[in-house]
Length: 220
Image (cartoon, helix red, strand yellow):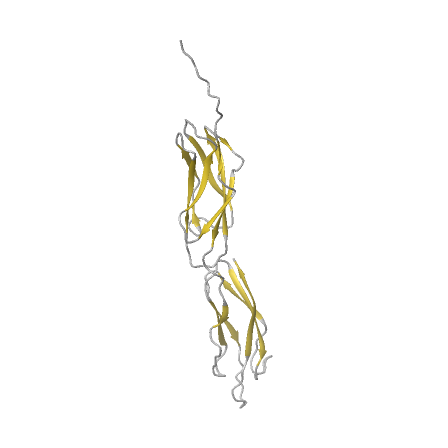
C-alpha cells in the first residue's frame, strides 16, 4: 500500500525585500536583497536584469550583468551583488533599475522591480578665476583669462562671464569681448576666456578690463 501525503503549502513567492535601497559610491559591492515568502523543499531560481536607471553600466558607474539567483532548499534570502566604480567625478545621485522575471519552483510576488541609488561621495565643484589678476603686452592677442573648476563633473558645467568695468575701451577700441558662457565638458576643469586685443600706435599706458563670472550651473 502506498499512502501519499499531499502538501498543502503553496509555492513561495519571490520578490525584492524592498522597493528601494541606496549606498555611498565608495562602498562596493552594493547588495540588493531578494526574498522568498517561505522556505521551500525545492531549489528556487529567479532571473534578474538591469532595466533602467540613470547610472551607466559597463564599469562607468557600475558593473552588473543579467543573471540568476538560486535559493537552495530552506534558504529564503539571496543578494544581487553590484560592483560600483568609485570615480573622482561629481555626478550626483544615480539610480539602477532592476527587474525580476521567470521564477522556477516559485511565483513572482508584488515587488518585482527595485530602484537602487548610488549616492555620490564628491561635493559639487566651485568655479572661479585661476587668479585675481593677469596681464600681457598689447602686441599679444588674444589675451587668455583662465577659469577653473575645483573638481571634474560627469555631465557638464556652465558659467556666464561679462565685462563689468575697467579703464580699457571695448568694441574694438582697445579690445573686443562680448558677454558669453563657458561650458566645461565632462572631465574638464580648465577653460579660457579669449580677449582679442587691438595693438594700436597710441601711447595710452596700462589699461584694465574687469570681468565677472555669474550663474554657474552643474549638470550631471
